[in-house]
Length: 119
Image (cartoon, rainbow, N blue to C red; front, top):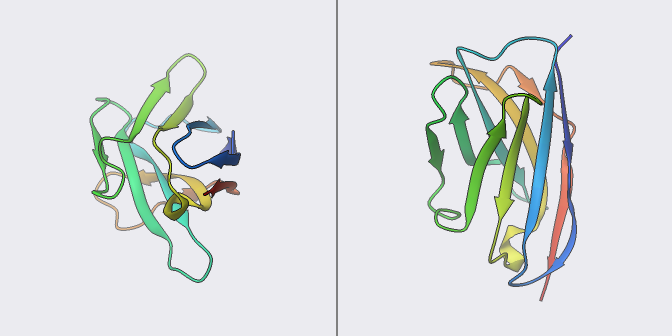
């Protein structure tokens, strides 16, 4: 059974940083990309960034480019999202997801972790 478990959310002041982690288990993820999505109150879920697991290539949404960085620890099968220069617009529930390459939507989702940025 595939499990994605996020951690690291919390409350931070504007301009601060947080690092989220997503521990993956239950299968190997070659042929998948692992990514982050977020959903703010009253808004649709949006793409934040992803990493192709086999190559390490990353892609980011324009809204976070230059501020957020995705990395991984292969030994721990864990994906990270380093978030710097946070602003109130980054407040959302952040979800980790695994998507089979060329699929439209992720096949697996984590439960989400709340990030709240105060002004």
